[in-house]
Length: 290
Image (tube, rainbow, N blue to C red; front, side, top):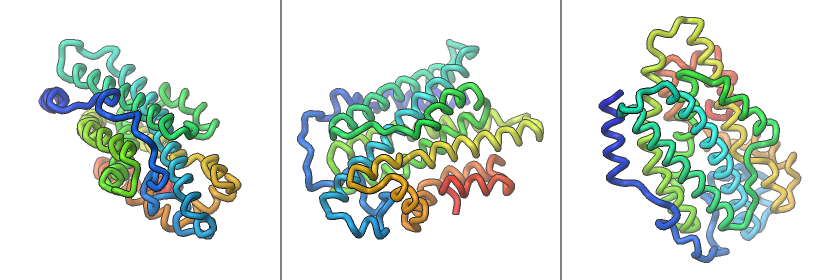
């Protein structure tokens, strides 16, 4: 773990971004460009989608990407709390703590970047539904051990897969693409750290302890994945949020997108014993598993 942390520290020193200076927040919003890839939107291919004009679809894309960014911001706040809690008894002279603090600093900048990107487009910071927002406070106290880093990995890697495609799509707003590019670069280090932490913290667990970690991981990832698109976004184009949510959850295009986003982290969890067959029902409910 020390060798990994030292390598990640060197990588952070070589290449990191400051969104305050590396993104031109004064750039105008081009009304002809999308907020995100239309094919990855929750209503793409549905009857509700067919009933929207292109202008309405672009408007919805800005609201949907804002929802995803605000949920990412919410989860990064939880992530930082978990990491700082784990560092309370760590060795302040060691590379492990030094890199973990570097990651927390990265996440502070990412949270600011997501907030500024939402404000740039003048749309609401939807965040997760109110019930999930309240559960988040409990989350930081209950989720401990490998499940905390497994949850971090899933949340980061599903966004990473989506953003790697988004940042190359010239139909998308330049600021959205730059936000994605910065996040992808720096989250690659975070995911490496999370994988190592999961493996390290799984060592020596009893069977009963492992079952607890499996359940915590599944429930946490269900909460995050189902929160990415807040149903309130649909009201921006005159769709009843309940109708939009129902259409999205039944949309084979959206379900395929969610499974595509979850493919890599779920393979890692299965390989490391955190996604047993008896938890697959929960994972299917998250839409990350077909």
